[in-house]
Length: 307
Image (cartoon, rainbow, N blue to C red; front, side, top):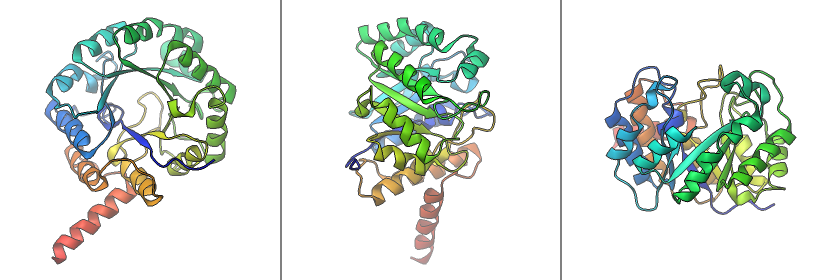
């Protein structure tokens, strides 16, 4: 299958990237992060999450963030909404897309929300109906699609089953997410091809964590399977707070460097993203987890020093 000529990147650092930070990130910093990402050209930004602040305190200011951003023309702003309370808050905040999430692993579903996969997705029915009634985009995320911290291997059939359930709910896009970053290229290709036998590949996205350094290879395998939407996080921020050791989304800078080097268009300014990654990492007090981003930042600094 020929590679796509253009890829859509969904930037998840404001939500998935920051949600697990122990020290609360100032609301003004979150607002600036979202604004700078929009200015860099991202067509879709996962900006906030409307979940219980008891479980994810870092996301408690979602309404304030949405109220403070300067909306970029054509940019879709998404929010995680696990239930109707979250949906109502997201609707009031003016989001463009709501995101529901369930696991392909029965063990993960039972350990985290005390119900089966089927029961977890059934809980999303009122959210899905409300989203469609309100004219909002609906996205469904399949966590643990490549492996589970509790049960280990997850069957391809289970991933396909969840994808079909999301399709029945009316999801506009469906994310195949490697929550703990254990996937490798061959398996990723098999999963993506199995899912796209039932769902239009134009509606499937890849969400990869780089725990074992496999994300770029997994994105390439997905491209070869006809996938053209991927989730990335500037500076490699984030991970899953419920999956031990699963820190590190794939870095946006690394993905952009690879895609642009392959002649694949994204509409995103790589240099601007590098600056954003260095800036937000400074606020958090961490070194950016991006090889391409750090190399490009160092090259720019050296050029300026020699000027």
